[in-house]
Image 1 (tube, rainbow, N blue to C red):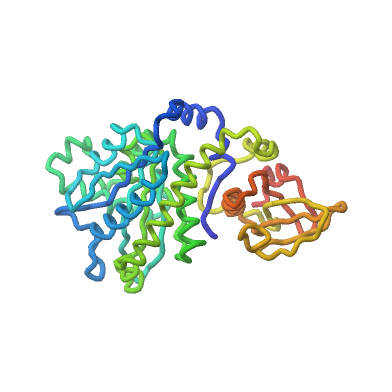
Image 2 (cartoon, rainbow, N blue to C red; image 1 turned 135 degrees about the vertical axis):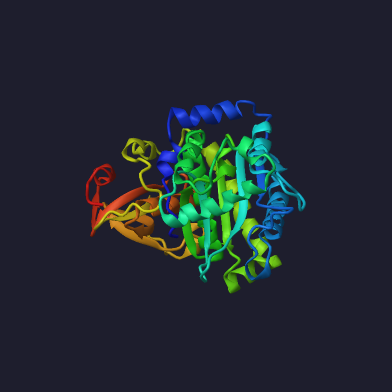
Length: 373
């Protein structure tokens, strides 16, 4: 699980997060609205690697996601398109805005001039490297197919790096929630489908900029890769991708509900101020191993997955007369946050992260505030 994540900050972001959440959900009768966007369409085929059409694959995956989500009593699904038609980028976000949606999820397929492969999930932000910039430019260039693109996008130039700076401002309020959703999606791709992890990244996508709610863009894989293109063009591949994305959306909605649960272990909330969004890709602490503590009991339990609700990589230490059981082990703090999400979803709602240097347990706050990264 190489997906990079900042769970504490996202889940307990404080007044900004919760006030936004409550203002959108203070009416218990209002369903949780998800807008699904199949990229491209009509006279815009998207990329056509190996002869496959991105627009068709994206639509198929979107419709399959919708079928799964529509079975949830509290989720309402809307689509930017349900057939092969061209929808302007600014209108895709506008559809979500008019519906007062809670999530906007845009589905795409990637391409490259090599045999690159793997699935990646993007949130809106300044491009951090040349590859992220190229992905965003490629997706944004579709505006030239629109009749009034100069009017609709106020002179925006997809080939100008400066144009990306303004894209991030209106979505900044929702960045933390977007990262949360993106990380859940990416985690499912890696842990459930064994897809190559291209991680959660930031890039300047117009289709995300135009929506006023948490939003992600998913590059489900590379059609230009022979094996991956065949997979994404298959019913099996599309079903698996749809299930992974839908399950992540359902988990996201449940985590928002969890954020209002006062019974969560107070130790989780004590660490909020220690974390900041500086790098959503890696946060390595040299010489430190982070683990998720699941339980502390007086009896010895076999560490097989069936005893821990399916969780693997369980370790056990005897400390002060108790057996303590831990999940995972990594120097990447963002990765352990994602593993903690996994543990919560498996029923360990009061689990928390601990830090070790060798066999010595350290104060987590001291580690997070250290310069040893």
